[in-house]
Length: 351
Image (tube, rainbow, N blue to C red; front, side, top):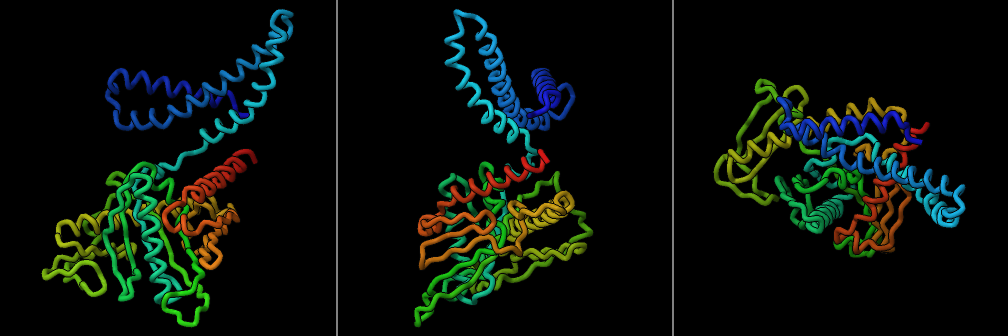
């Protein structure tokens, strides 16, 4: 049961924000007001639906004592009672703490793990899977750094994905992805196991992360070209080193100015992610579930090509539609991971 006092506090806060917005902000930060108002609106709507259902139930129960209305009440009550648990669960989900990074764009980094050339080829397959998923959702996927192998695999790729709720949908993809298949390079037809790592980071903004100019070193250099997608004849590539953390980022576009922008954005994103990870570790030190934790050392998924099977080990989900998954059809996986994470949060709230 959701505490009535908490529901009333939320409604009062929403009404206050509504009045402030109507008054033009009254000296407050209108953008911050608008965001809080927008975040609270679906919660308040869910509260209204839940409370209306409770009122309808109470009214129907009172009608039982009225001979003229008793028959109608007996028809309505079973349906109203059946809807109540569902409405209460929907309200509890709406009241779960929101990850403020969910609505942000994201950086995705994909690198081959164990498995040599086959791991690099698989990293390329994962890149195309996420590109197709992004296209299907109407997101913009931009590759900002890529290094390829001679066989067409990926040594490393960093992409920027922009759109609605990008991080919310992709945050469960961080981890080790394992593939089992017969490599194109394998003449004996033996099944080979290799892996690639994926890291999805919510993009930082200037408000979230401030970087002191004395904390960074910027170097310009000639883009290597070999194995990559850019071949430059000028020293346009940029490498930024964040001295306190030791993080190093590079960008090799044709424009040095653009490279500085990209490298700084990647650096801010990695620093923001480090801080998020630190806070998450503090909050969930005793939480066993890794779903949504972003633990990139964990093997999260296996793609078995001979059997056409994809298994997500965190939630024991197995789908026999690997071809569709590799074509970017991963909504069923993302939805299941989201539901599992929400269930774990609800269990924590009720314990």
